[in-house]
Image 1 (tube, helix red, strand yellow):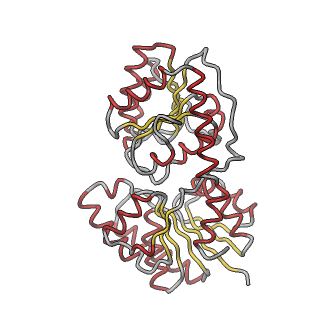
Image 2 (cartoon, rainbow, N blue to C red; image 1 turned 180 degrees about the vertical axis):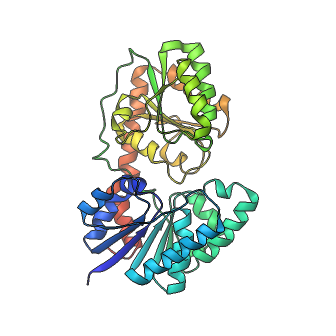
Length: 363
């Protein structure tokens, strides 16, 4: 008997980038309906066979009236669609669609892709903990991308231990991110930062290190930035460009050429669920440098396929990046190759999708 799956999330681009392989498998078992604000890829999802329902979400706002309206919108959607299973991603869909599913007795599975800034601030953290506890109380299971996040939910008594499932993030598609030839170094050693240019991604520390290293090494090192910046960083990025400290490439739909031209991928983030940038960089055959935090450390065997630095620590990040520069080219390339093998062993997208389906009781 064919099933109907409703996927509720807050960003169509992220869903396409990291979950389309799972959606392909869900389509084999029935109908897939997607509720999200569409910022691209709606036609791609329709071409796959999905039905798309544009749904506005104030992703960062904390307006109670808007959030209450979102809850009622989800209730109406669920009553109309009557799905056999709901799968939610990101905090507001997790909470408000979770409320709605629980109140209507509709089976649902929640994906916690990281704790985010809400869990770092004491007052907001208490509110979010309370809201999550209610929303997740009826979930069939809660999927996490690292053990630390799962343990945090158990320790806060948001969920019971038996209701947690930890997978290796979304995994990485090893065919879509094949090993690329190691680039020559005549034009400098390229460090790549790929992601949103915002404080929580550790860009303040990265920019400080970039200035120090450019002064010390000159054209021997190159800092490539790929992504869009938060408004507060517009002036800073423009200043770094003018001072020839960074090369800014803006947002790119296809990041693969930038991984291919890099020698090392750098993610000095403050918190992650599972950092897909690290998985993609390693799959391409590139060394990694990242904060020693849950969601990053899983991708790195320290000193083997990259280096782990202390979070929010300029000196530690500088030390790791200088360690990489001090290696000979052969060792830098070997680090990247070792990272590729690690992705094949631990983060293969096909394996993660199968594990997800088994967790959902669909395989």
